[in-house]
Amino acid sequence: MKHEIDRTVYGGLKAEDADKAVILIHGRGATADSILGLMNEFRLDDAHYAAPQATNNTWYPYSFMEDENKNQPWLDSALGLLENLVDALEKKGFSKDRIFLMGFSQGACLASEFACRNADRFGGVIVFSGGLIGPDINMKKYSGDFKGTPVFLGCSDQDFHIPESRVNDSAGI
Image (cartoon, rainbow, N blue to C red):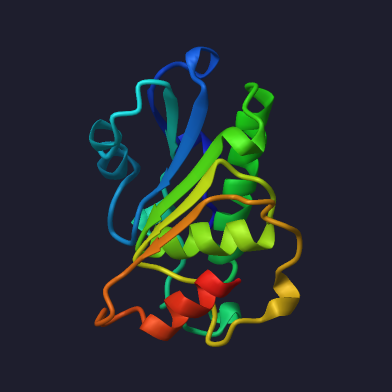
C-alpha cells in the first residue's frame, strides 16, 4: 500500500495568501474531506489547510500499539507522505514554525510519531486521541529538539483504544 500526496485536499486561503499552514490528518475510516471540515470550527482567517487522504481510508492496518513491523509498509508510506507534504509546504514559503500538525485518532498517532521522529520548531502539534506508535516507546527513533513547539494532547482517561499511560508517555517525549 502506498499513500499518495496528490490525493491531498486543500482549503482555506491559497498558500501565497496565508500566514500559516495546518496539516489535518484524518482517523481510520474517515476521509480528508471530513477532517478538512474542521477548518470552519478553527476560525483561522489566515490559514492554508492541507488534508492528506489515506489509501483505503486507513494509514496502517493494525492498532497503533501493535509491533511496528506488523503495520509496514503502510506506516513508512504514511510517514513519508507527511514528510513530503511538509517539504511541499516549505517550498510554498511556509517555514516549519508556521506549519501545524493536527490529527485525530489514527491520524493523531501518525502526527505524534511524525513530529517526534522529526522534532523541530513547528507552529504546533495538536493530538486528539492518540499517542506514539508501537507496543513500547523506543527512544532510539526520536531525536532532535522541539525548540518550544506548542503541543496539545487530548484524550479521555477511559478510551478503549488508547491507554492513558501511552498519552502521558507520549506527552513526556
